[in-house]
Image (cartoon, rainbow, N blue to C red; front, side, top):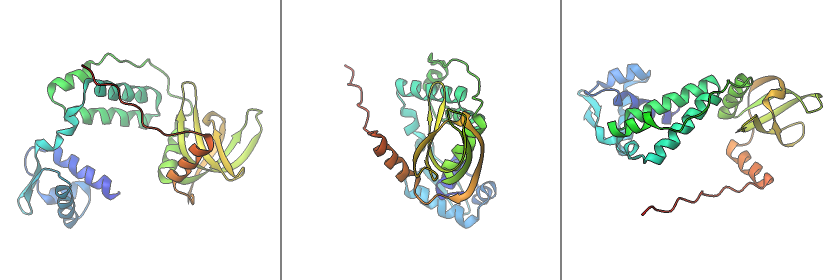
Length: 237
């Protein structure tokens, strides 16, 4: 578990409780040492988390720390709900569950009136079947997260098979298909692979030698894709 993930889980453990909780209880719940709890509490407090308490007494997260999530505008709420519903309908099982969990966490820290807006939003996503390539996409998401090489057997548009070792670093989701973006060792260049044409795959334990972010940046430059900040809508009168 990374330090960032551990700090987030510690915040979640505190957020679930309204009364002070002992450091030892937190340590047991998170599977970390008592010393680590004290160090992480201090780190969170230094970053502005409103955690009250002290060693030997217990800790509690004051409600004020959840203020930023409460400031969502109606349009931001609609965007969150629409995006989460799309992922829930079109993503693989784990991604769909993660979208639902994320929306539930957001709802939990909203005031009642904002939570009602979230539940009552009228932006809907039509039902769809899980893609037949869901398991393949899930394997690639894991490989990308950990920057692992993947060995595949790929069939091109002429149904000719080839064995490849690729470095996947992005997945493009389109209306009718998905595309794996990767560096191909066989072709020594960037290539795009449709998951429905991958006959077999094996995620390697080998980490590819370049940073995922660097590959993405170079691919964008190669494809002529410019990353620009989207203009914000004009202020309303």
